[in-house]
Length: 241
Ligand code: GLP
Image 1 (cartoon, rainbow, N blue to C red):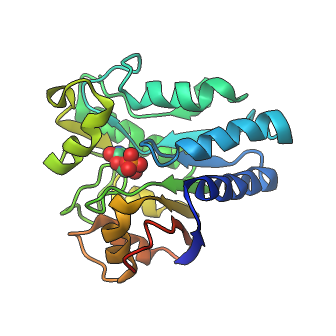
Image 2: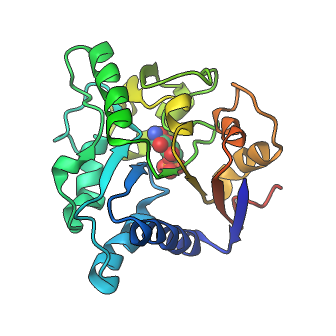
Image 3: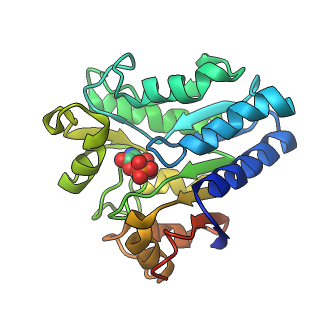
């Protein structure tokens, strides 16, 4: 795991954007794996700037997102589809047809998981996958206890994850109880992985990740099994290491 230590959130975001743009400049048909949550917001702002100021184009880029809440339609303001359209896709020259996110409203969740996993393989595993990390070490929505061999599946969200994501909802009870997420195996198929972690509330998780002990109890630790992972971490998140 390559470690890049930066001062703060802003520096993490611009460094991450630099790496994403390098990928696009090297191959303008790249497949990007994208994440939601508050962590990648600064990265997305930088990427939007890159289109306006550095002439970066997403015309031939395909994207696959990690996860989606079960039960929320793409038009719901708390769905990850809505988030991606608002925070990134609506501001860059990407063809929305080339952007993929699990369908939270699919009638059969099993069929949707199968469809999504097949799609990841069809358009190719991401050349570069962006990841945030939950306080309990979750990646995507792979909560502690997820098997390394997991592919896209439906999960019951950990109470701690529902609590920490409640900030985006008007009421904690509105936070969905389930989500569809790429599995650990699906994520590890990516050619390269970029993990972004910022802030004091992630310091314990960063300490645990960097201890290097691979365990189902801390899903991000499976990243040690991949040979091209870069972790960009800011001062606060690194403060307990
Ligand atoms: C969310 C997402 C993850 C994200 C993580 C951290 O629940 N499903 O993909 O990385 O939790 O979120 P944040 O970046 O807001 O701390």
